[in-house]
Amino acid sequence: MLTTRLTPVLIGLLLAGCSGMHSAPSPDPAPPPPRVDTGGECGAEGVESRIGHAYSEALDAALRDASGTTVMRVIRPGEAVTLDHRPERLNVHLDEADTITAVDCG
Image (cartoon, rainbow, N blue to C red; front, top):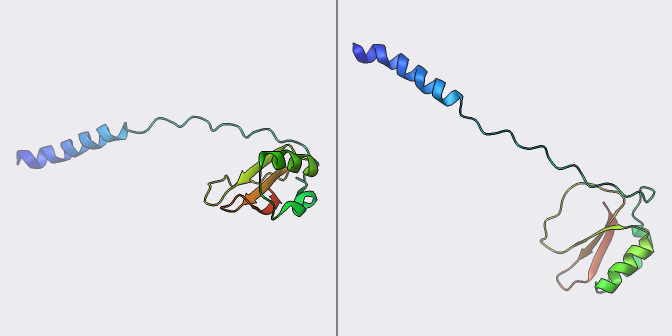
């Protein structure tokens, strides 16, 4: 008889103890990087002729100059990239041999 009276009390105490257990609030996410105004486009059309060429640091600067963008990322096979779309960013896609396979904005 004593256990049937204590059971609801014990359950209540257990539930009350668990209700205070929660994780701390996550900090605010970092603000997005500032966008560079290049007229909304990255200038990929101006560098499509470089598809099939080997990528190098010297070509990196030439791609920036020819496209008119200051925001560029090089994407290698299997590399994780963010999914945010930034029309002013030039994406340079490479294959395993560091040959440019595609260029696009985003």
